[in-house]
Length: 250
Length: 230
Image (cartoon, each protein chain N blue to C red):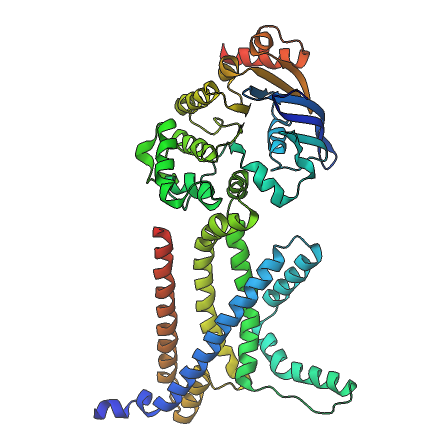
């Protein structure tokens, strides 16, 4: 393991009943790297990203985060690890009973990261980052999808994570709101945040990602730099997948 | 004054008031006991252990699937006999008895606990799993997630269902008259029998029950609105 490896997967396998969703995946992610997971639906992209912070428990194999095997940890020990891995969900999952400020500061205040007296200032600072300072007192149901997702990103950043996991962050958004969320993610990548992104946004993968993982039948069928992947895909399934996308776009 | 003192309600005021007292005692005790019991059953129903879940499920199904009148008579007539039989096996030969009001409280509480537990379970199930996942992904513990994310949302859903259940409980507690518990309906039936008036006593009964349930549902609504503003 090299020094700057932050996440390493060893023989990661997940079965749901009899179906094999992840099939002995071995892979590494380096610090400050942006990895996008792409591939047809049902190939285990979401399961893979959910296995990184143990929201889903792998059937076998191990997930090493900063050298620690997460599959051996107890529920309580995982809490400490999850603080360092922010996660953004397709359906935002903002807390509807709390306003934006409290959505962002609930976890860092309860976990003693920041004193309650500084919570508002911290929320303000994070909202500036995602361009939503005026929404600090708003409730989630008054936000548009794009705004909600940006608040969700601010909420995850409030824990000062080492890694950000994005599980199809723009799939539930109206097309005109996709850009504002991708912009925030792009800024984050530029700051050197380590990111794992499950996405169907090929433009984002091309422009922002350091590496593309093409998942097919529970395996990383291709692991390549975006320009190589999009211009000369090696894997036949990847070729098929990309040509189908082209058909749709033309 | 003359008019008032001639009315049936005034002549039977002592009986009506003592009936009201019995109804209130049974209702309030049953709401409290039924809620505590219902919470325990709901927690069992949401447990990770299959057996515990099955026990809670069976309890709820049986209570919801049998008439309250059967449950009430079982507590009042059968339970003392069963207890007596058990005691006689251990060599103690006494026949236990249960008074009507405690029997009423036990039966109404147990019956209500089944509905309360379903209201609580429904409230928790209505909170999207994504809420828990988001909270846990931030590093919040199971307990903190429950306390600050799940329970506040569940409560908003549970509260109206609970209000309906309490209103139903007050009305259905009138069934205790069949084991002779001197509640409102018991007194009203006596009034009807002694006066041969088939209309006024029942209107009085309806009015009293309506005032009770209407006030309760107003109180529940008040707190419901308060929760929405938080």
